[in-house]
Image 1 (cartoon, rainbow, N blue to C red):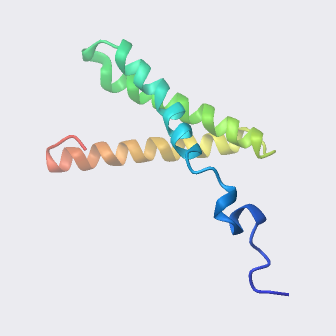
Image 2 (image 1 turned 180 degrees about the vertical axis):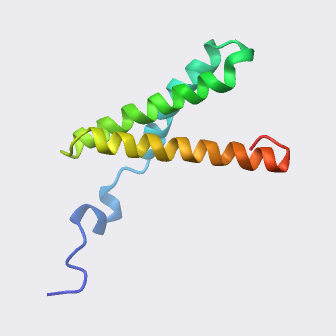
Length: 101
């Protein structure tokens, strides 16, 4: 058996992938927090956008779990937890260096 037999057919040929698809996915994922940012008063912007991002991550985690045929709760909690962790780490680093990151 060849050493590369584990590779998926779609991954073995770069021509089969549609390169712009990741751009569309990113744009769709960013649309919700951007819309919230546009509609939120400046005094509540940080918390509102943070909560909107977490809700969006939870929704995308659930959609990804469903698309992958997995249970929904565990992947949704995992994506939401690590998203919150990353946002908190970014805020802490920004506070330590005295700038928004």
